[in-house]
Length: 350
Image (tube, rainbow, N blue to C red; front, top):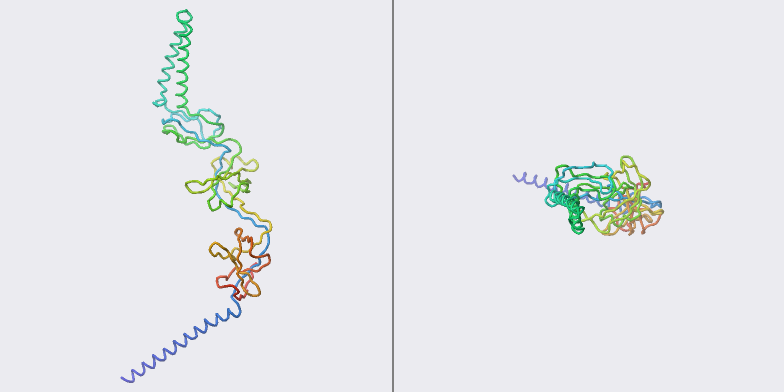
């Protein structure tokens, strides 16, 4: 029994010695890596700050609109009896577009028609009597006035029941259909001017300071590319998404089919262009709160540089201040570094 206990104690002691040995090896290995990094430097990849032209763009989806456009609405609530145009038709101002049912009590069409018929019959009777000398001029004038008033009443009634084009243009949208109830103020069609179209885009609030009136744009649709410029930007944001509407004028004479009102257009806006910009790879940038920094290599050490970033695109970051052309900056491995940390360049990025 005592022998068994002695054997177990010996095994336990041996296991403890082995564990301490392994643990000591681990600490020694860790310390060795730290010592190597402190002595030989932290491994990093670097690139050289260059000087070149820099441009930055933003991409949006726009809608082709006419130079002018207006909605067509009904002034009264009534069912549509006839649609007199089709989408894409060219129309003239005051051309009839829709005809509403004549049964509307607001328009009082049948009452106005009856009043005019009665007034015309009465006028014919008085004219006959006036010719015979049976009534004076004053009576004829009074009846003529009543006929004219009745005619105006019917014209007003007809104007309520016949919806006309408010301007020359093209039917860009047509939503009104036969049998549909035309509620007062509800859009039944949209007329766009047949002159040179524009493109309307919505600029996110975050881009509002970047996009300026006069900014150059590339507009693409169905393989067609045309240039344009931001004509103007709304001063107030849209309630639904807090974006800002902007209108783009097109250069030249675009293909009418490719840029028909209502079509969606890919819009690329050049928001920044610098001829001689200091450029570094975007991977060199480190954000700290509202500020940017990077590590520059000087004498084999990583030096923290506070920088001002002017913009970024897919290939480069434009540095307004903080470093100069030709400086070597860290683009990989910066997470291990601190100010004046020794570095070992293992691969220089091109």
